[in-house]
Length: 185
Length: 290
Ligand SMILES: Cc1cc2nc3c(=O)[nH]c(=O)nc-3n(C[C@H](O)[C@H](O)[C@H](O)COP(=O)(O)OP(=O)(O)OC[C@H]3O[C@@H](n4cnc5c(N)ncnc54)[C@H](O)[C@@H]3O)c2cc1C
Ligand code: FES
Ligand code: FES
Image (cartoon, rainbow over all chains, first blue to last red; front, side, top):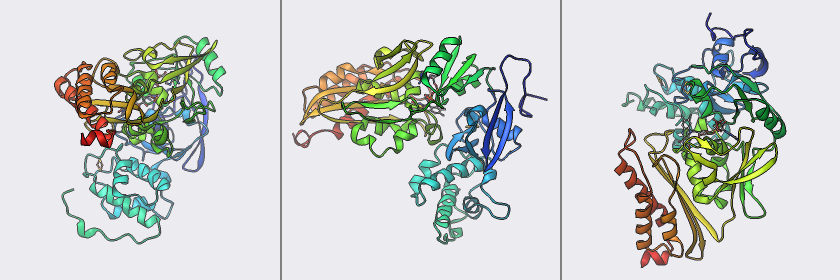
């Protein structure tokens, strides 16, 4: 088994394995890990929460974005030990058993994804924005998502999805934008 | 990708962090990790021990002090500066640069001080520090010392920090007059390093420039202080001829390389244009008419 197929426990080195405890999507999770384990690997391989994607693995694409105490971070660029005692939200933490999060509904309704690879990261950046600013302008949405790359959609429908979600979260009934569908996205 | 093995320490006081650095050979400070972790993953850096300073209280504040200086603690993130509602009143140059550093996700982790310690010639904060005449306060086993930024950065990716010293804060000195300034950066896309960037700081006495500083990003093998361009400005009221002379002097101070971001000539041209634009923003009304 390779190092990151499961959370590794090294016994060969003089580097002690660390026991960490963090809240992931509201649940307390503990693991014994090597310091060099990246948060993205702990989430995907250790905790088996594979909704968090690794795209570039070089801190450029934002596909691995999770919320760290409510703030978006690139989980490929944070060590898992650094999350000890902190609160992590992954895409799996958005929906409840029976209901999608309004951001997820927005992506569905506004066709905010194609291959879906960037989507979890996009939605978490969007969540951090809407938690701070419930009524963003289109510019503010574009700005907040500018660290997340999408190779499919041309971004247009992603922005619409987030504005849709913002309106729904404010208690409004989002307008049906299907008339704009079939554009050049 | 994952880094080589290292031991991880998470001290909760500066004293503890400094003794860990002193006791461990090949130890490195981990701040925002947005430069260090990518380098470790590529194995360009392979420290034996990481001393994570993120759990040390008291390093995350920034603000104006009673003596007129402005202090930025070692754990102040780029995003803290970007979102600050008071920074712009005191430090227009820094406020203008904050939203232009990296991308929004990197900005929630990366720190101002860590960026200056990283000493990347492409770093935006070093140019601001150079323009503003800032310093770094370093703490080691024998106490604190204050190091002016042009001495602090000793070369590309090199500083004069000792292995057992931590940069605890950046200090911008008080202005001798009304502080004005700005930052302009050309980037190919959001999150890219600068093709060229210009940091401007002006201290105005009425409509006369009492003091000026210009820092240039990405147009040489280290951050450039355009001292001749700044000297042209002092004593002037930013009339058109002075602005043109300063723009020319700033471009002459660069030594850019042609690369995937653009040719050397193009970058020099951008520097001159940005200097002109930044200065025009602060031209007193009389000078504009003249
Ligand atoms: C995709 C991407 C785009 C980026 N774009 C830009 C950009 O456009 N402009 C720009 O300026 N930067 C950019 N950066 C770099 C970013 O700003 C980093 O946050 C910054 O360079 C380093 O700060 P940090 O806190 O993350 O430091 P770290 O990565 O933790 O540390 C960097 C170095 O400084 C040392 N160090 C850090 N803090 C201290 C301290 N307090 N005392 C002593 N030593 C210390 C570390 O040991 C290490 O050697 C980008 C990074 C990424 C990943
Ligand atoms: S996988 Fe982390 S930024 Fe691309
Ligand atoms: S939907 Fe494919 S990368 Fe965004």
